[in-house]
Image 1 (tube, rainbow, N blue to C red):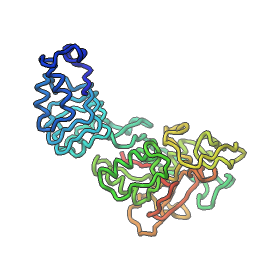
Image 2: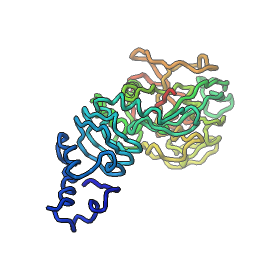
Image 3: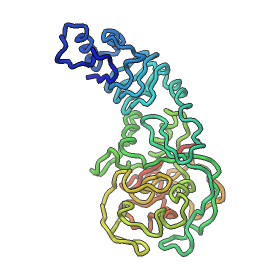
Image 4: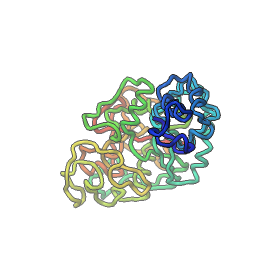
Length: 380
């Protein structure tokens, strides 16, 4: 049933006390039929129910509704729930969706989707002036954190336990522009949404560990590129994978220690093979699988699981040494089949030294494993 939180008393009163043959009863019956009636009658049913689209739709539950081919100009869904609704070929640019829950709705299939999107852009304002603030371009896009420019020390010092030569010595790197990065790794919820909307050929195996809020695994660099290109197309924004420089900058969040949380790490702070300790840290449990992306405390910049859980793809081609590390690296989009791209962060089945902020790894672009996922970035 449609739930109307701001309707006149004669409409929201107890249904058991209303005669079905009365005007009020007929209105309630019409409101109930809206959920299951074909779209060509939607406006007519609103009229029968005596509902004003510019006023009576606000703060209400219109989940599962079928708006296909409907001109929604003048409709106001502010504060409403419009989950899993159908918007195929609808006209939506003249409607209001302020603080509307559109989870699961295919609003990007509307006839005037691009016009609607352009109208939403000013709501975000100048994101570059709000360091570490959160935003989401659209209801189905990942939540992003605004990252301000600065300098930081990249790489590991000579004496850092567990370091490898390909990490280089610490050196100053300049981040000259604002950008945004995902608060979490991409989840199966987000990946599955992309697969449904695009009919992408790779659904990705979850190993029986659940999907939902778990990090998407068995996704290659090529798969990650397909996802960000789709986001670019439906939002008009420049989504991408982060460069290694950006990734380490965000992981460190202003720190110079092996981990953002200090000189050691425990299985209470990250998901890794807890049977092993780092730098006199504690030995704890080994979970033997991934955990939800919002597990553990975030780093000082609000980013979750930058250490452990899954390795995260970066945009860069992998090199044994950093090149031009004093400035921002270019995003590498062209590659051969056997090209190796960098990954960062460590994973659930790796020892803690691989979780260090400076730790690096690499795989061919087609690699799909149960300990590899990705986090996205966005140019502002």
